Length: 219
Image (cartoon, rainbow, N blue to C red; front, side, top):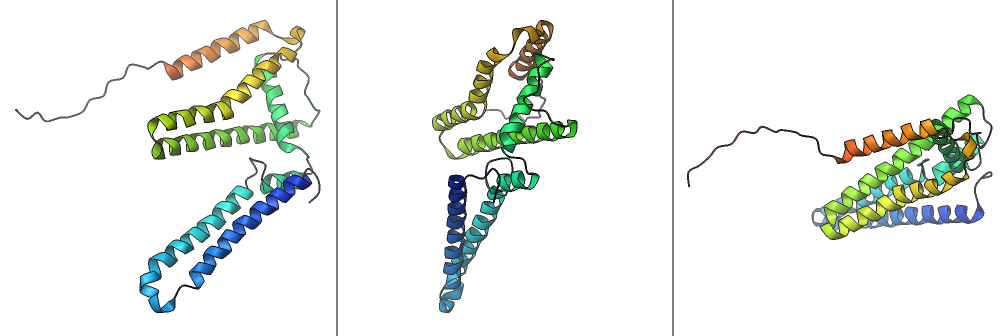
């Protein structure tokens, strides 16, 4: 493959794919060499091995074809579009649009694109962010289901910091690079007020009454 693929990253992807295929071949091999004379006894084992093999193959395929993260699907999409560094450039456009809407309406774009290209890059960045939040919610749910509560709370906080807090902190630090002459003070105050209202709406409990039926038994 040409384009944005790096040799080291490509080697890692190939090794990952070979490892996944190797696990699948071994699973199917164990499924195939099960003793026919003990067919009834080994039937649950054969079904389990077949399930593991198919699940491993499908999950590996879905992960590698995912275009939201930098796996094979992302590099294939980037090469097909002939658009190197698709994710980095789309995130730059997304950050620029957010700053332009909420802070500095006259800020210049990091790169000049056609209007339809800008929309497509913005939508791709938004889809990537939504996918990462979905992964965060899934991992947090699994942590609360399968780990004890204290460890689940620590894991959830770590995930939130890595996937939400750290990017927001980096963006906050980068706001200092904006030309102060381009900053619209009225727009900034309105944006901050909207943010505070949103946080308050999400965190402050609203009054709610729930009516249920019950039967009282004398002691």
